[in-house]
Amino acid sequence: MAIDFSFYSPTRIILKRGSINSLCGYLLEFSPKRVLLVTGQNSLRSSGLLEGITKSLLEKNVLVFNFEGVKSDPDTAAVDKCLSFAKKNSCDMVVGIGGGSVIDCAKAVAGLFNEKGFKSSADYLEVDGTKNISSRGLPFVSVPTISGTGAEVTRNAVITNTAKKTKRSIRHDFMYPALCLVDPELALAASFEVSRASAIDALCHLLEGYMSRKSAPFSDMLALEGMEFILSSISNLKNNLKDYGTRESIAYASLLGGLVLSNSGLTLSHGIGSVIGPRYGISHGVSCAICLPGTIELNLPALNKDKQDKLKKLFGGDVAAKVRNILKFLEIPGQLSCFGITEMDINKLAGESLDTSSARGNPKDLCAADVADLMKKCI
Ligand SMILES: [Fe+2]
Image (cartoon, rainbow, N blue to C red; front, side, top):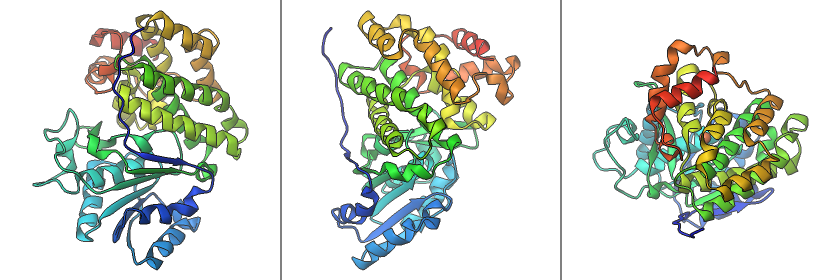
């Protein structure tokens, strides 16, 4: 097999138990004066972490401006509002502490901060918009409180386009976080529902990134390592949410999944998820997982024998069947009909799923009818 690849990841990554307590020190290395702290609903405040971080920075004469309350699946309006808040307060650094939604919103704000003639983040969405980022934004630090999306190390922010009911990415090499600090202990507070959706999202990234037509030996190595960690720990989520070792393994796998997807892209399963998720109110990880077994069956024959053999060995034979078992064990519905999707909807959804950046990485060439067939099998 020819060794031929390009791999880019400029993010400094720290994964360490209790590292949240050292966040202030790491931030000071950037010499900030006015930090925008983007957070979610209120768990960070109720845990006392928000107050602690703010106090530590203030003691070092760094002002903190907290944009609180970012909801799941942030839309362009949320990004625009947060960006105005950052500009109004002349922030010089952005820190996102939370789940994938918080990190995506914060990353988009940091990335768009210095764009000349900015009107709306909607203009910068892939497929739906017409503009590309052309300036370096603010230094961005990601601190995931739940692992799975990989957003902590990627160069894209997934944003909902409310007007078109789509989920698209704002993407640029300038958007890589400067620093990613992962403290797996933070995930111990997450519910089973959030944890399973995040973990299955990570598995999708690793598997799809490995299958992607843009995959390469270096990212494949990371994908296989990540899948091994996910497979050995994902079932523990159901039995023991408070097990630190499980959280650590999934945090590591999520990181690897982010590095893989950033370099290798994804496949149809994420393409379908990004269309049906916002339309039918399905959480991101679940929406991408429903058609994952079908996507594997469709694409596995398109991989070379070596790659197929490695996957089969890792998954103990039938890869799609093993994934179906995992979904069943985690009580993730495997049918589109569970979310109100009918056969009547399929043709339109299939066409839109094919027209996504994720689907472009699919190793097997597909037409809309192929996607519709796959979706009908999942109905
Ligand atoms: Fe994802």
